[in-house]
Image (cartoon, rainbow, N blue to C red; front, top):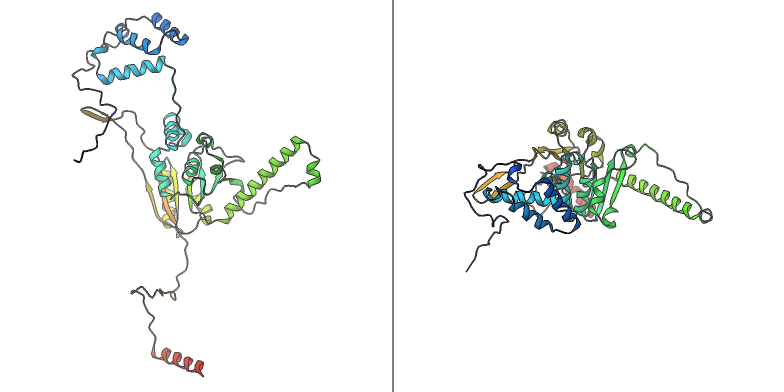
Length: 374
């Protein structure tokens, strides 16, 4: 016999009741315990003389209006008391989902109000996968860079352009990436994007001069040499081009960045631009549609709404974000002149069009064949 899958809900224990909160008097008189008694209980809890559960139970028992509350209100009341009296924390594995949700809730300005559903759309439109070569500009404190590195899994190359001499990818350290994933990231300052800017010079020491250095001097020399090699290799990787995608989140005008960096993209490769404001992307979308270097320029917005589901009733959460940003996506193409002499020569395709040969051309071909035989 085929049995349907039983969906277990965390609210199954909540039963339907006729209780409501209309007759509850929400003031200090409903709590029989005085403020001094509550502070004494809290001190005993800090000393370990009294368990937190016992303190909460005593406060619930002394609440004269507690039984008049709905089951959901009771759960909220107990949760507030646990948060106040229990010093408990739960370590959470640093994943892209958890970190994005945390910063979007606590400090959305740090990640430019980039919501998790918009970030997932960005990764999908950008066709992010392993063994790809990507170019990115990230002003979300490293959230986009972290998402690209996680999706690539340590395979491929990621070149990130940033302002200043050093990048500010603070969120990257929360991900706890292993070395094999961190090593595919190459950062280049905006000031070094122009190929006409000369390379930074480095004076290498001979083996004898290096051996004469002290321990601290050797470490400093190796550190400078490693940093110089890293900068040279990163710029070389940028100028080689043939990138498989371009991801942009910047305070600069997107069309100015596209004009400068589109030359490094291969043909038929995606371009994705994120901005919390739709108006910023309108000019770039108009420019992309008029340009011969891009196709299918489109601005999209995703919608995410969280619902509170209880027995017999359901409604959206009262405190939700008004938006998660906008994405401008397009396809980079390489314009080439039309050549009418090009034709399909696939013999297996019945739709192949054969070139018509005139009588004069046929005579010329026959004469050439006879001359070759002689």
